[in-house]
Image 1 (spheres, rainbow, N blue to C red):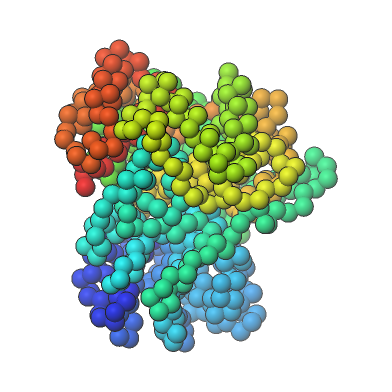
Image 2: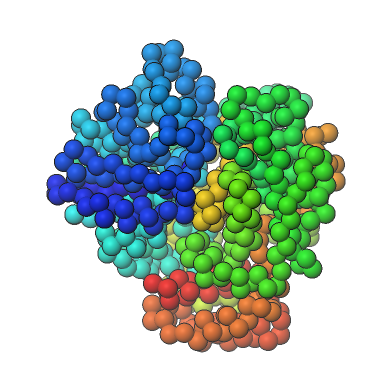
Length: 611
């Protein structure tokens, strides 16, 4: 896990050391254990790297890495969990390795299979490989976009990095606001991340499951992964289906325990993180594999005393089951303002809440020298967890809307307009132009995939949440918040084998009798505390926004709204926003719904004021 960067001068002039160094230093927090750079023979291309040493933490894992024959050079951010199996396969074909790193396995895989290596990888990655003979540059991102890759192309140069703000602050490109993206984020904070566009007009995102070539100054981009094309045949009986899920999930956890440094987990007490830590314990009992970290009993629990989203009792149960003594981090009212500007800057985008909880818990891991965390991200979008008690009617309505919206772009536009109308009626719509200028939807990965006709509305909605809307945004947040402290997050529920298998299952395996994640709950029978396995309460890992906005954030929001930010004033009816925020704050009527609708406006104004 690392921070990567690169500069290609398209007119043949040399890349200055200060240029690549500045770009690499801007992602230094992602790799606090070392840095490196590499220049092509005529110095018109340079790679930069900041290292978070996890696999082969000695000199063997240094990057940029050059192949043994000197032809290929790589910078790589991520982990290839099945690198030991691939290494054995490549050795059988004659490959000789000098290190114990997964990076060198990628170089050998590139030589053997070229782009075909991508479908063989089980992992998360953003990588760039330069061929010194052909002078062609190849870049690729993992199936679901777990690891980020941002880039900009001008007439002068091509530049890429692990973070958007690094490109914006590098001095290598001009920077301007993409107004269409900004408006879209204020309507739907989950409607941008799976697109290629960003808040910066000049910066583009290589989308998840895509790769690209830079040849003779021209970019060629293609989608190399489409989940629906890889759905397996599912077993005939319920018992076989459950057993197959259990086998894949247990192996997904085991693979992600491969590490040459200590690992741990962020334990919320909900089903997902509890299933992960209990399966880690079961894997040790069954017998650890090669390169598995034996130092894994590190659980970090964020608690919110007195808040509605505190799950400490459940976290204590899960930790006791796994025989782990957890580290508790209490997050209270005073933390609403703790490092607030730094947290917003590290998140570097617009979201529905202040992500302090995640930022603070990953900082706690760093303080304990635990640099890898196995977390439960992806399970909600994979198996339909966004149902809370009393919301079954709204849940079915959202599924019906998703089914309608998946039929065509026109239908999705209709759903969009209905959503804007609903938000306006609730008093939470502040975009200038009113409903006449509802921002258009951006093209998102996966939204037009041809799904099986027999799929239910729920399955269609989950496919879009996983690939196009909710999950890409969550992955972006957790990458930035964890890597702000140099922490690698691994996600067993996002193992591609588990994803394709679960996507292929019928709706009843995901939601039935008021329970979500049915197949996972069945698979974890007798493998975790029963009260958590069959618990219906769903609490997201979020800061307690209603409590904070009703109290400690009140002064901050008022001060922010008083600032003059012309770019924001052009987008938003500021007086209407100010009046609504003032009313909610004075009456202490902030709740989760109002917070999630209005916080993006506050977040956006902060970002534009920062620029």
